[in-house]
Length: 379
Image 1: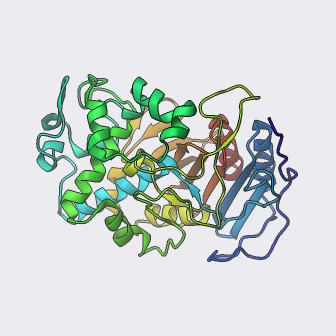
Image 2: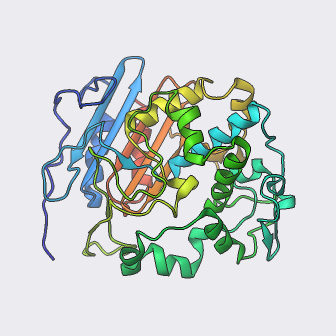
């Protein structure tokens, strides 16, 4: 195996503001030293590169380590796009809650009210599952990305490389899930399931009369000026400038071959994880959401009504609440998809937000938690 070297692990040293970046970010500022150390420490996982962008009342700051592209010294910068994975769920949940706030639907409508007859069989019944239960993962529906045959044939190993440009409809993915019995009765437990958000995307289309992508662009992306955020649909590309994404295809061995998987069909993650974005755009989204600019305050309270998962974590409507070691609570979501890991979070009022991303999918996601712990627990 050819060994490709990466740029030296160091904080970026104040290059000119990246093209397209709305707010100039500085690469060093008092109070962020611990965050920078944790970003540099991510390189010990073997990831080619890492980036964190934080914003608060003092301005915008970033830490960068490694490279955006293996075999090249390309410093990861704030305007580099990456696949945001399940961070997409915050956008999907927001779009559906916006429709509820407009009176176009009710969160306690059944899935069958909007998608009649689609969820049936093997103990699954859309007549007993509400839209709220989709968004907070209490529906009990099986996660199609856990189907053993689908994982083997499309998500891991050489089969992923052979099939990574295959296209799926949400209905096909949902059918894969419905071949399994539910995890539990609706509302009687909690299980993370991408199937919930594949269904939520279809409900958004039915209630809005627009495609999922059109609705997100119309009500979130364009109003907030998220110029570097895209809903790719069937496009396999990550627009430049970008972090190239790398994967070991599910192998945990440190010597496993690393593959460039930047290009892939986004139809498997769809409304559960297809968005491409940048750290500043995700921070701007969270600032708007937490401050009530995207949904009225009563509806934001519903989004932040959570199901406890453990002492540190609870899950609302597309939002994960995490209690940090210093006692603060931040709101956001993580993203994991072939080639990328990321996490975007903000304080409850949106005044302090941060996003961290690596261009690989094998590090322990808890390593990204440490970056956010350092940022939000400064001093």
